[in-house]
Image 1 (cartoon, rainbow, N blue to C red):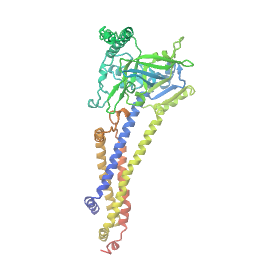
Image 2: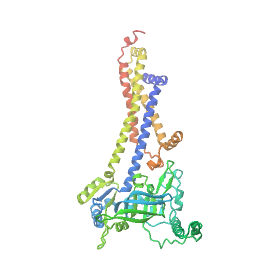
Image 3: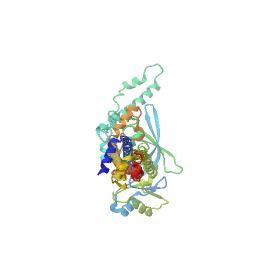
Image 4: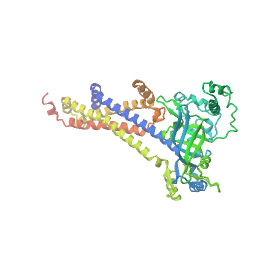
Length: 507
């Protein structure tokens, strides 16, 4: 009992011990927040990558692909059976996207992916990222009359959704205005060429000739167009405040140039109508990949055999049941398909370098931040040595009254354990509080410093994602307590070795 009483007395009277408690608290809180943010980023990226890429991908090594996706899909279904949830063929080709803006033409390098609108969303969660509700239910490449989201529908709450007022004008309404503008522009150029210099304003004459009303009779049922779905990074740019500024919107046309399948290849230029936008939150996808109808892209590239009608494909994407091991499926498919013609991989195989970089960064951050707790351990070590020197007389009295060496050692070990428990508990509370309000803290720090702390134009997230791993939290707290106890072992041992007569000799 006397050990607990002395330990409590030291804790209340030795205010220098608060330094150790604060150090442990800050170390534990920092580790909890850092692990939560890193785990949140990793989980968010993995969910979105897996959702966009599927579980297993079979890719043709030739850029011009392989023939007869239907027969290969039948072989895969027969091999996997009920393990397979969805399967779809795709065509991929590097391309150049050209977008007309008021300031001029913007050219971007993209990967154009041809997808089957009936089966692609069975394999990926691509449909969840589309901006039109009808396309989220069932994707098609037809332009809609309106109803596109004017707020970020992926936001965690309506209050956090960023407004996108330009989307109100998207769809057929935008296309009618675009068609009327093109007709006015054409008439203006004709009038300018036919009008002598200083003979009036040909643009005003073009407007008076019913230019403002043209396009109202634009019939969606008559016009034929090939749709394309662009990522937000291709259709817009995002400023440091998270606001989106659009280069193009659903209803406008873009030009896409890509090579055909002939040898030597020749450049093909096709006009596509933007029918929707998607936002996966991953810059690698949103700023690089555009989606078009599979059959239209196969026809444009010359991948369809004119005699048999059989088309080539570049990849087949598979989605498996949750309990199925993707690595086992990958290995089985590698024996089924020739490695000289096809490359079979999981989504983790394709993103392995990025995932390993995130894991390595997390480990290094944990090691570096754990040094904060180690510094607190050295503080406990120094303070306890000082206490042993100061309390030499008291230790001598205790031992002369019958206290054992083990009992004296237990006083200091209990003191170190108490410091670790108090510091770890306070750090746990502070860490969870910061994790729950990390975005509020981010906004406050940004307001104080005047600099964006979490730039949405870089990360493509409006908010910082977090995920608390209970096992990691337990290990952090246990590690902090262990360091506090280990730091008090040597001072406690030294105190227990004091001889009562020698301790009281000079008193």
